Length: 132
Picture 1: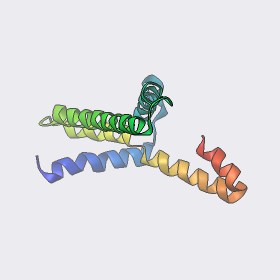
Picture 2 (picture 1 turned 60 degrees about the vertical axis):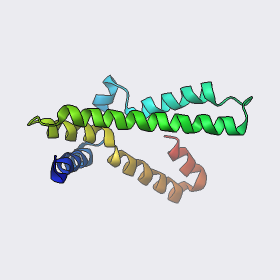
Picture 3 (picture 1 turned 120 degrees about the horizontal axis):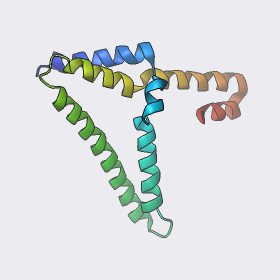
Picture 4 (picture 1 turned 90 degrees about the vertical axis):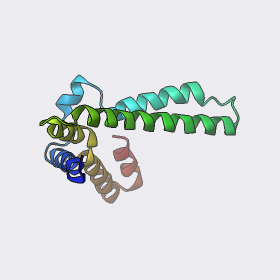
C-alpha cells in the first residue's frame, strides 16, 4: 500500500466532514465514539480512581486508562484499514468512516460559539457555551 493509497481516504474523510459535519442521523442510531470514550472514562474513574487510594496508585490507574483507550482506538482503526485493504470500494468505506468519526467541523463550530459567547457575555457566557 502506497502513501497515496493511505492519503486518499483521509482527504476524502476530511471533505465529507467539512461538507456534512456531525451527521446527527447516524448518531441517533448508534452512540458517537466520543460518547463511548466518555462512558469508558466515567466507568474507569468510578472503579479505579477512588479517594482511598494513594496519589501514585490513582496516577498509575489513570495511565492504564489512557493506554487502554488509545489502544482500543488504534485497534479499531487498524482493523478497519485491514478489512478495507485490497477492495475497490475500501477507500470509500474508510473515507466515509473517517468523515463520520473525525468531527473537525463540529469542533470548529463549538470553538467559534465559545469565542462569540466570550466576546458578547464574558467569562460566564463562555463557560456556559463550553458546557453545551
